[in-house]
Image 1: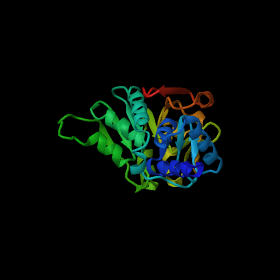
Image 2: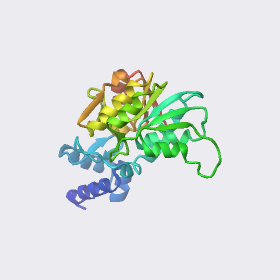
Image 3: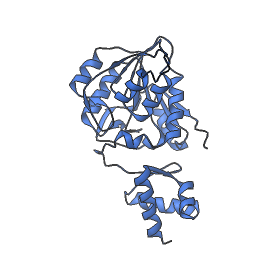
Image 4: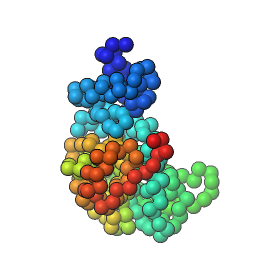
Amino acid sequence: MLAAERRAAILRTLQAGGSARVADLAAQLDVSEMTVRRDLDSLDAQDLLRKVHGGAVVRHNRGEEPWSSVKASQQRAEKEAIAAVAASTVEDGMTIAISAGTTTSELARRLRHRPSITVITNSLRVFTALTDPAGDGEDGPQAYLSGGFRTPSDALVGPIADNAIGSFRVDATYLGVHGFDPQVGLTSPNVAEAQTNRTLIDIGARLLVLADHTKCGEIGTNVFARLDRVHTLIVDDGLAEAERELVAAAVGELRIAETGAR
């Protein structure tokens, strides 16, 4: 297979799944991992993808907002590991805010049987995960849904959401993000969602950010917080060592969620 054919195949795989690991691409293309890495270097240099530790992800334009249904199928193991760590930080009796996002939805599923907590959210997915009885008959958290305009990322945003959320004060805010960067901070491609995220941050005594390693270096159009606002950043073990050092220096605490795949 010629280099151009390999690289076209790599791009097709990324478009289908959103991300790909070097080892999987090597097996798929029947070439060495070193060859795949060279191909990824070339495609990254052309801004056709973004290299991350162990593989590559689709490169989005700064204003491009992927649909939550697409993101939900990506980095499943990483998101589950991050959600498990986040759930362990929620204590009985707490009132918390949970933003929209595929990783935060995983957190909500782990809190379904925690009736002692109260949750404020701007996500239909999170709200449903917390309140849907699913035939088990067990009580769940007391949950409040903000209302607002729905974005492709499943966030309810805008003045209605901001006013509803702003009437609460919570012990901690658990935030999913489009991207985080040591220099730029937390970003979103949607200006209204960025503002609602600011409101979610402002009502919380502590800020915990949940983001898989592919979000590192991803920069959306709208910055809504610097990393020094983050008390705890929970990321999976795919984050490269050099990036860990930069991020750890910028946030209060960096927690690594082990996926067991490495």
